[in-house]
Length: 163
Figure (tube, one colour):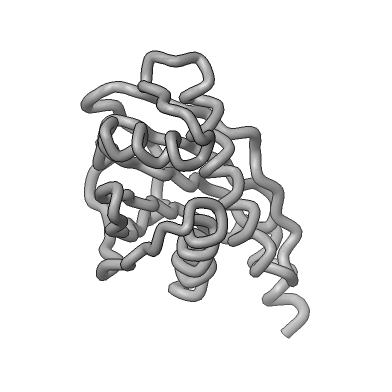
């Protein structure tokens, strides 16, 4: 994966959290993920298609997710609430949408978000697509962005033909 694909996500999570929640985000050292098990109990997932394909996952512990959703919605909401998953979905949607805007020269679409809640769940990113884990620390707790993207064959071929 091209390292330049990671920076827009780091910038986006900082912008979304500071603008929406007045919550600063400290970015840790990105690393390659070696398995498909998610880092935490709550995951918002966005699919990417077009000239790039893959998945973006926002993963956090339940208590962190509940604190962030409370900041987001202005009301206390636990993970059992029907609206909780919607709030997590909207959060990953905002982060992915802001990052997508940085890929101006690529025709890229993002899917509607999915949310998975429960310990030990797995999100498979596709064979041969490396996943970069971006650890983030907030006053509400740890949040992790998992970015697994690759250029599609057509995009890579058209870039080669243009050269």
